[in-house]
Length: 250
Ligand code: BGC
Image (cartoon, rainbow, N blue to C red; front, side, top):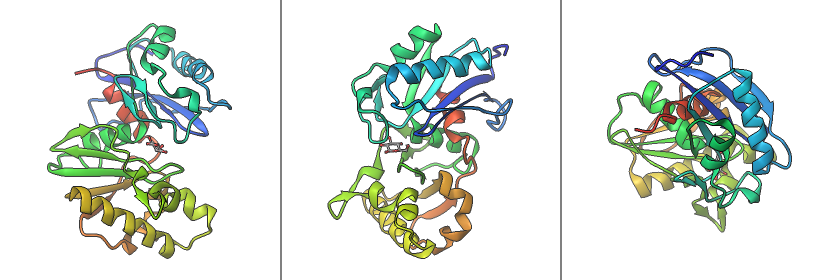
């Protein structure tokens, strides 16, 4: 794939799949071609995951900077948490690991932050000022926080504690499936979570995304919370798009 200034390349590393695609960064953040997915290796140790990253980049014959979204706190390229990935990631300099194999610049960031970047650039958050939080509801419970369009990275609001456990454990989309909750019961839990987020940050807008946003009509109208709630526009591709857009350091 020829590198041009408005095409970026993003990879989203999830618990079950690693997805990649080139992204058109100048118009609407659409994927240039369909994304390519390889199952996440198990155990998902850094070296095994890095090998798949190389395969994904080779698949598209991409030669250029790469943005990678990881379900972890990532500061200056170094991984600091591993709630839903192998613990051996902690303290790994992921940017150095990937860039030494790819021989190109790599930016690694939290996956929910990447999804937020996509929404703020081209999706439900485009043009929004003030405090905006994007909350992807999936297996994990990620979050992103923006102030006047600027990302406050690694907010990790899903790990706020509630009744002795994390909100992630109690209110993520995986909790609905695990406990076989009705949409109404699950929406009550999500409302409790959003009320806590509101009490702490008073967001103007909360963008709800992730896998559960595909069935938004079942639960979003049931939410009881003060801030405006809007449904994310990028469903499965948000992480790829946001990572690609962040791959060029400003
Ligand atoms: C992780 C977050 C991540 C979220 C979604 C959570 O368990 O702590 O960093 O954004 O899962 O993947």
